[in-house]
Length: 127
Image 1 (cartoon, one colour):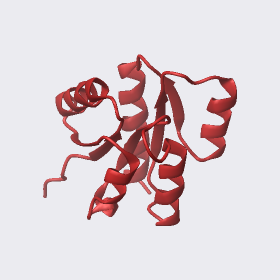
Image 2 (tube, rainbow, N blue to C red; image 1 turned 90 degrees about the vertical axis):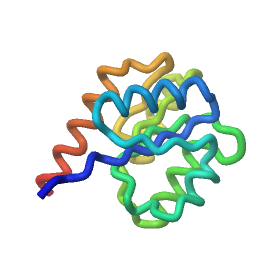
Image 3 (tube, one colour; image 1 turned 180 degrees about the horizontal axis):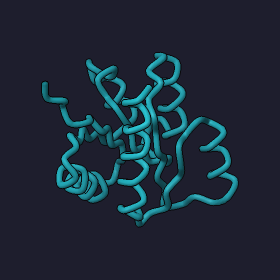
Image 4 (cartoon, rainbow, N blue to C red; image 1 turned 135 degrees about the vertical axis):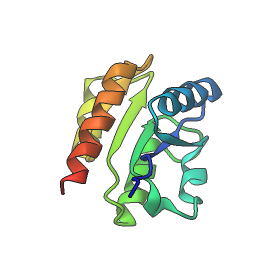
């Protein structure tokens, strides 16, 4: 029985960041699912299939925090890492209190991101 690769949702309004993360996740044998807004992400018909999310905090329209709250309201229990080019210590604490695994600063440390995804997903497999 083969296990499907993890579906990783990326939400960022910057085309370059989305493309870079799409390439990174594809090369790491994940299936990236990229959206340019929180609203576009929420309109995805199969949100329950998503295994992990990487979400920019500052988006056009709803913020990353608002998206996370909406996902939580749907009881998806979706592990999430926030990313931001404008984060400070207070924002990082807010992200962690909101239930994020981490807040990564742009430019993103791709090794750390992949490690967080791998650790989180391997922990979920054993649950």
